[in-house]
Length: 360
Image 1 (cartoon, rainbow, N blue to C red):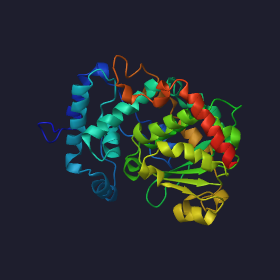
Image 2: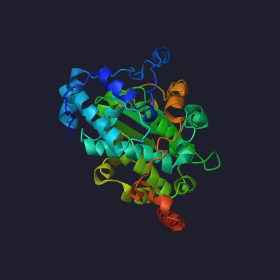
Image 3: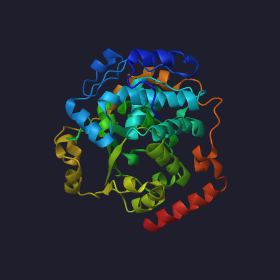
């Protein structure tokens, strides 16, 4: 589906979006002062799109994502036209930078990019406890605990490393859904730079301290919701998932998660046990902290926390707004299965505990 004109300027694209103010959300403005205070991570994109990719990344995007610079704005306009025609009541951002995330995540397939955008917004409707009043100050306790961070140095492939420590959370601390909220805010920040949109990211999870209480608490349907958002509801490319110091019960955890994973994603999980040499074959020591045999200094969990908290206003604009799907009717296929499962969730929970006890 192509528009009549091949190329549209940013100003024309913006003017078309302005004609539909009732369904558009303005993109958060770049805070230059905030960006300067966190020079290790790129700041938000400017209000008017201007490509920030290096020539090397432009070539990589062309090869891996089928992104043609000379057609980039034409493709964005095509997706914008589809949204306005097929989903006129959807309150979504229509700016170039935002829509490019979805095109890149689906290799510029218009139909798949549109489906991803709908799934992205549907997640907010089917999981309100995650997305209601979603802003960094509401998950400060998660950040202070050290549940997650982003390592300051990208790997040689330009991929930032999202570092998780599930064992830091205990069920009596706070609801598990708060961890999901902090994770989602982190992903939203990570996907802003065009470099991440092209390079993707790597996940490193240290399962030290994870026991039966943490493993069984989320339940299988909550696990499915998380996987569904990461795979089909968020415009990011997860290139590898490295698990270190996993306990015996991780086999049970993974057995529950794996059926929800696409084959390609399941193949990207690498279990290292306590073998740092195995980890270093996948993530170079130059980007790892000393605690994991790296040379990038001591692990600092506070830098990412400060960065997110300094972006409070940005997330208020992005998430603390009226329901973007208000008045929009979604097919049942877009709702998470857990919402329709009823009593089956308890049966799934019993199956999970059985698996974990068997592996313990």
